[in-house]
Image (cartoon, one colour):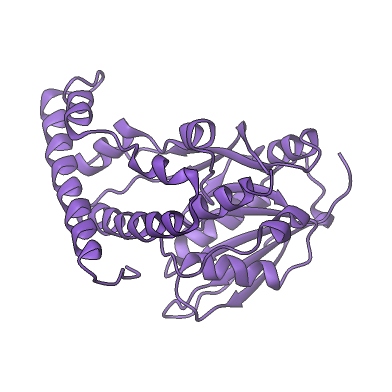
Length: 295
């Protein structure tokens, strides 16, 4: 593998503990030359201000971006970095010890001519709530996003700076679905997305119903705005935004899921139903002319 300089971009908002865990896991990476690796943490307006944990083994810097939204924070980090390769991970994720080496290997094997998306895996707690069980049943879906829909979540993304600059920055008007818009824009330049199953980042599923509803509303708003964008551009990917699993199919998957008790399945079903209602409510709110919120 060539000795390229790697910048890891980490946007973070009000999550000091998550940031600490993420940076520690980057410190524990195997098979990489840390003299060529630098983390750029972008505090996206947290209160109180975030700090870097002491004693990190790899080089890390902390920036502050006051423009709200994780995509604005990522763009800010890219502008204030110099790495030949950009690796994106979220502060509420922590990478497997081979995350970086495997992601770079896939990128190298692709001749730095593709976007690489690694796996994102939910890590369950010891006493899962109904909301958590529902999310565990559904999974993060990274492989399907890449192979069937042509985009990778920014929770685990590798790209050369050259391809990033060719595609252009993330759309900062989107608080959700900006990863889809960016990858589909890259596709218009002939840049594809490849799945790197051995480059793994872990994250916790939402435990609280409130947190899951906030997430669902944010995603619904992002999908509505992105759909309008794609219609205006005449992009074919607009059809992919309609490929959402039906409530009947999802309900059957939950109620028939193996490995869970009946009470757990019912709890997950109730959570799923409420989350779906929140998603649909937000979609209608945006269609009627309201603006999406950061949340």
